[in-house]
Image 1 (cartoon, rainbow, N blue to C red):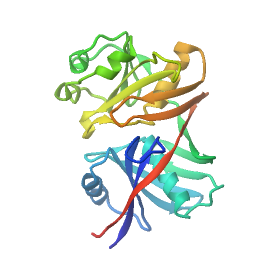
Image 2: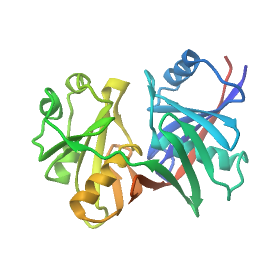
Image 3: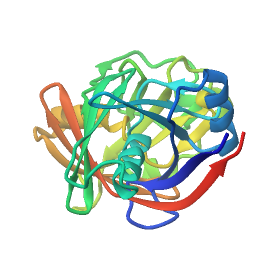
Length: 263
């Protein structure tokens, strides 16, 4: 068996920035163990597996240790691969059938717009290990079906975080999002996102986290369009628009590697 695999840097237009994802276009379904083994071999925050079907593609995402129910950057990477390699016409919408419902992507000049579900949080008690794991005082703690979201009072605190992974991986959510208002006019807010329980201590740029961050900052700032920066070492930019029960995530992508899976 030989299956082509693409490595794409998402939420950036520069190689070696943004968030790298692997994308495999399959002609036939593969078993879960095989997909998990491929994701572990790729050792990226997510590997996407897409299979053509009527009116779109099925899409699943795996971290090196587990399947996840929603992933933004690997969806962006998947759409980019479909257009770049002629599986879809440049003007066609990409439709994906996933564990989080139907997701879509469309091209906007050099950008790609994802249509994702809104995942708002509700204020929550602070779980044990969270504050010690982050090592910082917080002004707000909330939770949605995936993650905790934590606000701190300055961009500097977000940038300077040095989490204790062994404490954070004990928290019973997919991950922890830390955010603050931006200290400059370049962005509306910044964030970092940590998923040690999924084998991804810090995710470089997390589209699905912005399905929570968008509604959160809409409540705080009374607006529904944002320019956001995820302040990991690689860094990435996301345009975010909140529309009722949906969130539009707009970013760029660049292919950096193409290979073959031989087994």
